[in-house]
Image (tube, rainbow, N blue to C red; front, top):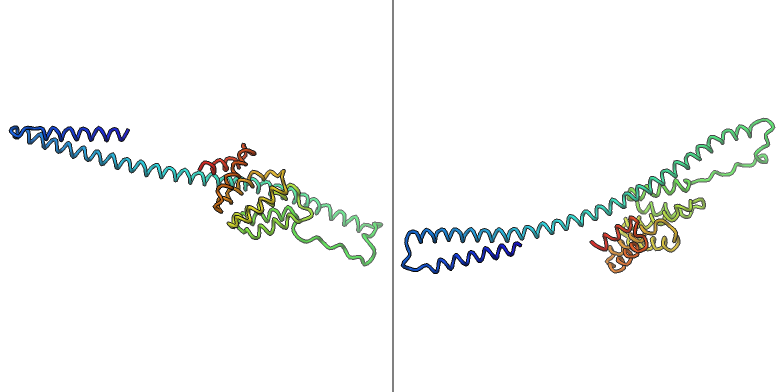
Length: 263
């Protein structure tokens, strides 16, 4: 509509100029001079309106660009918040598991003194032949505690320590099977935090290959796409985003994939 208003203003300006030129020379008097002065004022006003219209168009373009920047920033913030929420959920689950483990350890400690008293009671059979040394205690943190410590290192940005801890957890003979795939995922996240995108992709590829039933697959896929995008491999990244949308359409990872497909 703005260009139509500008066209109308210009037509009025042209008509006024033609009327001024069409005035007969013999009719020049004070009334005509007054009319010409008024026409000049109208002309200036029309010019001012044209300038205002152009300024408004410039301002509209600037506002549109600013709105686009704000939308992009909001999308990035929503993505960061989603990742934080997922991390908090995983941390809460880990803390719950650790509390359960500590409860079992406390129960075992409470039973140990009773066993010692029973062994020292008269008539109790000796624990072993005379001179036999007790079995050495197992050193190192339990697997659940190792996992929690590794995640805490990741959350603090100690990515190298976190990678070492998660790897050690995976090799622990008593590691819980339900968290081994999670450890692999967080190894990838740690490499991503270091901006070692190639290593992050390799870690997530190992998760996709070795743990096909893991609930971390959607997140690993979408984060792999983000790593590929950071490396300038946009076409491969788009393939990962589309896979997440097709295979896991109702997952939180699908919302992130959709945002990256339609930035």
